[in-house]
Image (cartoon, rainbow over all chains, first blue to last red; front, side, top):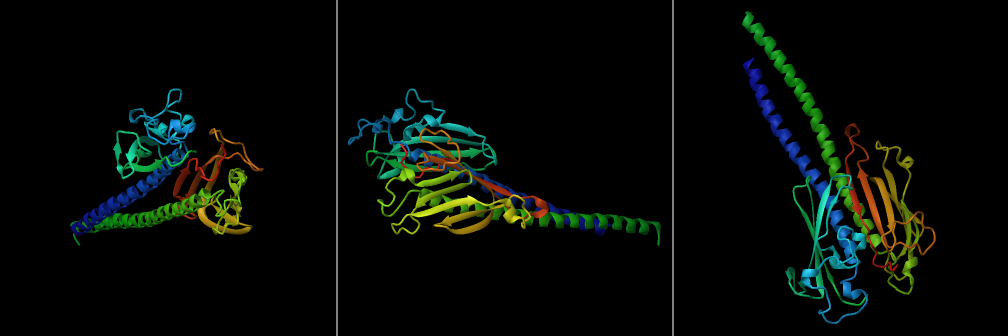
Length: 162
Length: 199
């Protein structure tokens, strides 16, 4: 009987290790499933924002100098625009500070947050605190169900008058 | 044979029986997990493949190598419904506009697969149809106007007034262990084709 008990102990140790590995695999698969959905959110916001005007002032006039552009500290929605309703956004930097809890996805509830900054074309990874003809939108998407935060970004430059 | 030996024997049989049942359960669980993990992987790969193709094609709505061949991009979408869209594009970059259509087939077409909800996704280029079964159970498009308002469907006559779209795709396994279908979901909100100038 002792031999049988020893066999049982060995078997249960093996089962424990197998279950742990199974759960780890399951965890990775679920995580990648949530990440796919998170990427779809990030891509969507980038698509949507890229379709907007470069700046509030470029809506009605062409500019050749950066002076008329929105000041870096004022990037975001303009007075009269609801910062929580992106249907009212009319230019790229309106997405600055836009934060949402999205519970419409069937996979999980996602949170996302957008940030828009001026950048120097020569060094697009570092935001600058002055006006330029290029802006960078960074969107972070996360969820309680995910281990990591998905970060996506895009550059938008003012090359021509829309 | 003494009484101790009998107890030993009975105890061993009981423990052996428990081990045997455990092994059977483990085997079942391993099979279920193998199916589940493989199914999940396949579903995610199929979703990514589908999305890549659709994004590439939808991005080119209204595009033509010869810009004068589709002079009015407002008329590029010829027909739009929740699971069916037809538009002008230039598939081969030859400057000649092509008509491309994406639509979902009925569930009855795939009645031979164990999953009762999977459907064929068809791509039709100039009337030549190609279909693929990647386990799509949902392919739904919502259309929005220039002011972000949702448009009523179907949109049958160009210009359809479509400015952006929301594409929902759900993919499931075509077959699964114990009908436990894994799924992956993608929502491309407002994929705005750069060739559509509706405002």
